[in-house]
Image (cartoon, rainbow, N blue to C red; front, side):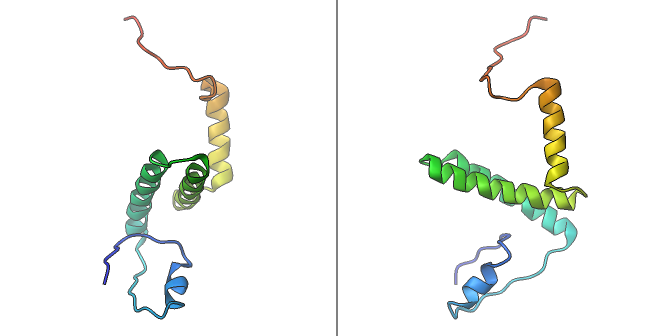
Length: 107
């Protein structure tokens, strides 16, 4: 029996159940949930970094965004609040669209 020990999407148990396979799950505490969301975020970012084409990259970015939605909720906000913060930072400091790569700054 493969051992996964990782956070999965909410419908995964039902999907596995439809295969008639035995499995075990547990409900995480709030602290455990945040830890596992952070691990999942790292996993999805790693998968994005090795994506072979644009479609795979977009699939992985969608997974990252799903985790960001969940993280926003556990931190007492929602994706709209995260977007407002992102917009404010973009207004104040810009975004990354101009592809500027800082080499150094004189002391």
